[in-house]
Structures are given as C-alpha cells and as structure tokens.
Length: 383
Ligand SMILES: [Zn+2]
Image 1 (cartoon, rainbow, N blue to C red):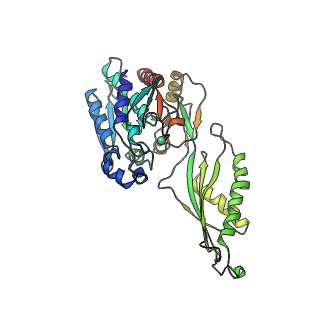
Image 2: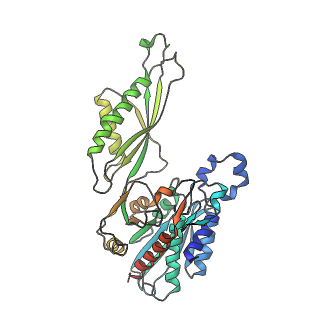
Image 3: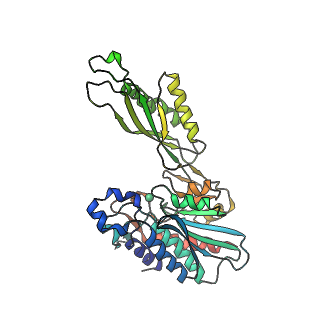
C-alpha cells in the first residue's frame, strides 16, 4: 500500500458529510451518527498529518466547528510566487457502509474516494513528499488548503477568497481523470411566479388563470428560448441550457388558480451574468404580454469559470500533464469562487466525476498515484 493510498483510506474512514445533508437522514439515525457530519475531524487529522511532515499549519474559521485547513511549505528564499492546492473536505451523504474503505481490483471504494478525498490525498501527499526531500522550490511557496462546504454553498472557498489571500495559481482538486480543466459553466436557479385572479371554477371568465399563463411561459422557455440558447456557443463549454425543474400551482379543480410557481435551472457560459439572463427573459415576457415575478433561489452565486490557458503556469502544468488543448467540464466547483476572488484557478484531480455522489463511489489507485506524481513533478519544476 502506498502512502497516498493509506492517507486516502484513513480519510474515507473519517466521515465529513456536509451538515446540509443531515436532513436527508432519518431522525433516529441522525442522532446516533451526529459525528459523521462536518469537516472538523478531517481538518484536525490533516493538521497533525501536515505538522508531522514539517508544514506550517493554521485553521481559518469559516462556520462554527467547520474551519478551512491551511498547510504551507515555505521556500528557502523570499517568496516570489504562491501555488495553491485546493480540494474540499466535505462529502455528500454517506451510509455506514460508505465509511469503510474497500480495496478491490485496483480501486478504492468509499464515500469521498474521488470527490474529493482522492485529491486531498494526492495533493497533500505531493506536498509532504516535497517537504521531506531536498528538491523544493527556492522561491515558490506551496499552500495546501482543505476547504469546507463545497457540496452546498462553498462557504470555505468564499471565506478564503474574501480573506484577500494572494496566489499565482490555484489547482482546485476535483475528479477530472487527471485532465487540466480551465472552464466550467455557472448555474442560476430562478423562481418565477405568475399571479392570477381566483374565481369559482364554474365561472372562469371572472378570474385569471395563473397556471395557464405559466404554461405558456414554460412552453416558451423549453422551446424557443432553449433553441436560442443552443445558438450561443463557447469554444470549450458548448451552449448554455435551461431546464424547468419544478412547477407548483392551483389548489383544487373548482377554483381558478391565482398563483403558479416554477423553478428553473439555467446553466450559464462565461459572459452571461445573472442580470443579463433575467433581462432577456423579462424582455420576452413583455413582448408576449406575459408577466412573472423572478427571484434568485441560490444561496450564493454560482459563476462560470474561464481561466486563460495561455498563462505560463497553466501552460507549464498542462505540459507536465501531457495535455495540449484546454478542457471544460459541466460541473460547478470552488475554482469559480477562487477565480472571482482574483486567483487564477484550474481544476485537476484523480478519479472520474461519473463515480461522484453515487452509492458505489470509487477511485482508480493507479490514477491516484499518478496524480500525486504529476503534482510532485510540477511543484519541483518551479523555481
Ligand atoms: Zn461533489
């Protein structure tokens, strides 16, 4: 068993389920397994692991009992650049069986194996290997930051970005099958509400049917508007999309409904801001004589990510990873938050997102080791 694999197995056995998912567990089970929620145990375990490896360790307070963990390897000389290794510490919900790491056919199974305890093990493993050896960069500081709350509202990366921490590149750990990703879509959740006039179902002519008005809006969103979005194309990410995911309206058959509500998921490409999206939808509604109230349903903005792949540090990393063209992914992550905070960010990590959030999450151990080795090679190549 390699050190990276051992570290990952220890991390899987130490649960860190995002407390936002506690409500999805039956109350009885929740009481018995309260300790599985929150990142504190993992953060403390990684703190002592890092301290033993000679790294400077500190916690950044984010939410009660849920700190970011920061571990630094300072260069011998004055710091001229800083590289951030930034995976998240939380996972989606887990059964007890997900918390027992199981090795089978070159894979390690368990909650967080690829999303993103695999990246934690590869990134911190690489940093510790560098700290133990002689060949460390002479003027580049390398900072590992284990972020909390990525799976819910990204409180960890938002607090980190707000702290005005400066870095020249952040490598955000997510399962990309060791591909270097420079772009992903953003996501807007908008609630739209139509207002009608209630009346007796036998005399609908005296009312105004909010469900009918919404039906026309839904039809437009899913046909004409979706077609319009398909014409908009980003070179790496393709087209933006729209999905009407929830609809709610009416009380009973013999009342003309005075209210109907939908929630839409609008995936955005770089350049599409929330005000712009709202404006284009409102403009259409006005033109058709329709009207709906629109409110943002996300707790925090989920912006698209687009980092210039021609940046020298990005080029250097892509070269070491053996990749010529920039890539995009469909999922949102901490990279967009750090990038909006002024740190050029890319996404990279072992594992495949196809296994993330599934009941049988696993990671390829060969990929885990290769990921750690690629990171060591990159970090050693820095001055
Ligand atoms: Zn995830």
